[in-house]
Amino acid sequence: MFATHNVRRSEIQRITIRFEDCLRLARASEMASWGRLLEAETLLCPGRHVPMSADELDLLARIHVKQGRFDLARKRWEDAVKIGDCSAKYEECIRVLDDWLAYRHRMLIWRIKLGLWLVALLLSIWILLRIGSFITV
Image (cartoon, rainbow, N blue to C red; front, side, top):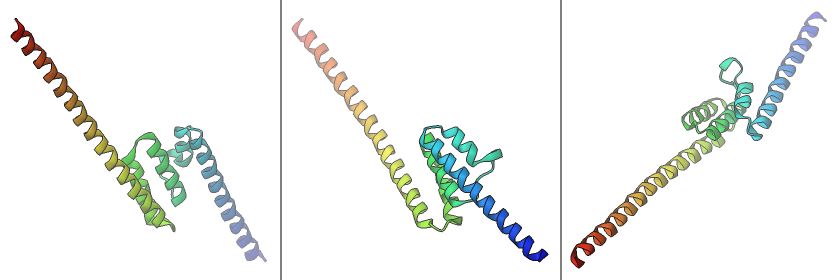
């Protein structure tokens, strides 16, 4: 009877801990959806400890993406791939992040080229106007 009581007690403790983890994840998700990213991150990482469940790592990675901390987001998804059941989902997140960062880099290069082209065009127009003013004089 005593052993059965201890088994039940440990099972209740395990269920309680799991429920508290799910509740903490839900609260952090709600805060993140409201834009309260630092509070959500604090809930997920009490005492600056990295979460242990794949779902918590996934949410933390998404928070990092919203904060612009892409290297940390990638690391969190890589950690989630190692421990999670849905590793294909997290690998897809990493692939999408890499594609988006490559696109962002291409857009930056395109903007720089466009800016240089406009400067060259304006400089050419200015030079032509200067030459035209010398010819008419």
